[in-house]
Length: 272
Image (cartoon, rainbow, N blue to C red; front, side, top):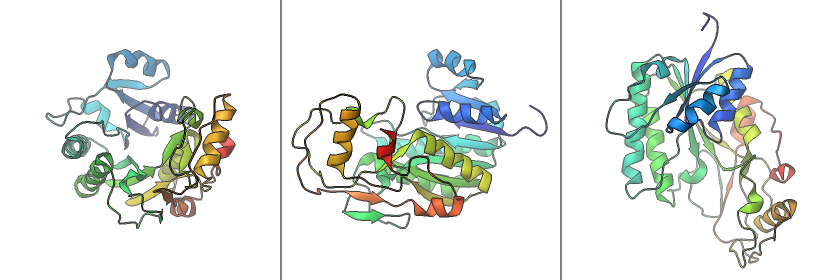
């Protein structure tokens, strides 16, 4: 690494993390990436990523100090379904934060989720104080607090809504199903391209010590969006009940205003 070359470590090089790593490699950054699987090490290395196998189990110190020598760390490890998820995930996050504090990490981006908001038929912005409906949302909220309270450097929490893009096409989500609740509810999606664009903007604009929602600006109706998505793949479209059900409409105007980022897909229907 040259003295002027910037470095970033991406914990979790999966659907989002690997393309994110490739984006920064394209900008001539030194990129370190992690996976929990030995089988994926070669795949990451072929993309130019310095690959590490890291498993945060919440029990012991992470014995990979070189991974935490980058200037910036992206934590992109969603909670895994388990009975003790609300207790385990914040402990796993603390384990990662401890390693970052012991290393050279000065700035941290935590990839969260809008599942931290309840579905109460409301517009959910970053000031929304509704309690999460699900255990995963509660676990994420507790992990966010760990980041804010215990990381010694600057941080940013980025709450993504529903993810779409390569290998995650909404047309497959409800194909052929009948009488699905909430046909008139708004959908909340963001495309992979815009996920990467927003992370880049946070770094370039120095948007630290902030919490942001990340969601496309437009919110098509659930019934219209998923029918269009299924038809785009030549699949049987789903059928929805003509009601709103329980929903939330995620507002991400704050990050757009403060970053100046222009979404490639402001309407998720454009990406189908």
